[in-house]
Length: 460
Image 1 (cartoon, rainbow, N blue to C red):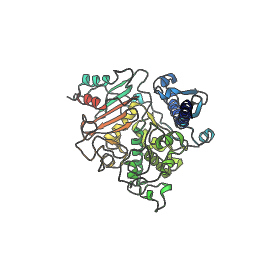
Image 2 (image 1 turned 45 degrees about the vertical axis):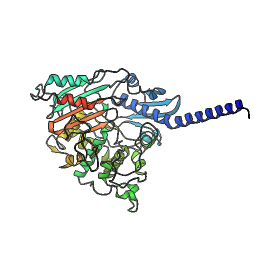
Image 3 (image 1 turned 90 degrees about the vertical axis):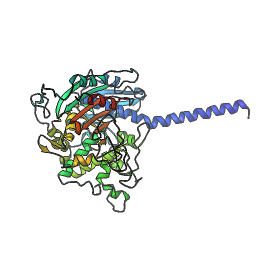
Image 4 (image 1 turned 135 degrees about the horizontal axis):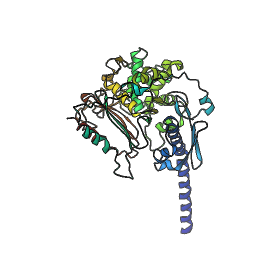
């Protein structure tokens, strides 16, 4: 065969292979891109009340997301997304439930679900003193240098690199329960609901704690998961504590740069908890820490199955949010109707701060014990071996090796909720401090340690 023919054939083979690779990539990735964008847009527009152009310019501005086209339908409160007209996905908004991505079930099936929702109390929070309301005191604590604290906050709103913006949107600082500082980016206010992403996991952990206090669950017993009921199933020994501590041992891949268990669960599956529960065992339960959103969604499904649907949809609101004055909070369900306990919760910065204060006060709020006595201490106890430090759906500043701190500038007793794009609630008991930072940091370049250093430097 002549050399030219050989070269031509090789070129054709390479072109066919490249076309195949691109087709495969599109087949796998486009539904995730369109699903993610539709869900984000739907929540932001219909739940948070934001302008759709602002969402496009900011939240959906990452390079790959620009390939998508997201159309908002104000008539039926939905968003439909596609990539080059392919892989269409739709997210729908329902009052009191937020946004849900249509997956596996039909839109009609999802919209026809009957849910006994909580009735929000008719309160005018501007007349109710903080923290149950939004009436603030003008007094400022003598222990804090106000000018230095304001400078620390203002610093993280300044963009130093236009190509890699940090996009801090909201900061709230509490000292001894008092709201002493807050600031918002242009286009955002104290009433703007913002996504917590994985900070939702810590809320799910609190809901489990409430059920433990009510005697409906025990963390050290095998988790009541139908798929693991058989005593001969190696997953039968997985406890609720294992799930809380991210030590279930399930074979689950938490990766977002490609198709993985996490992306399939969040953007392709109707019942996220059931999908994760179907995964096989990879490690002995309790032996290996592996951060998994799937574990959190199993916990959310356990809450639903424990309570039954007649109580489930009211439970987070009547037993937690409304008791804390978190009237903006919304937990969003998957297509099957189970709250996405790993990722999908919206609330104002002040309400996220109220949740942090709730943990700072050992699970007590307005003189009512909501979490079991000792729950917060147990939740913030490192499991050995665990150098990074993780408790009951909450991150710790130190792990079993107390010489290593993830945030060196902060005290060792700090623990925190941490969400995608640097959503953070820092809780520092030794300083009586709660610091909330919400934003859209898409390049992992928010320097939380420097921010904590500057905030703590404001203490006289």
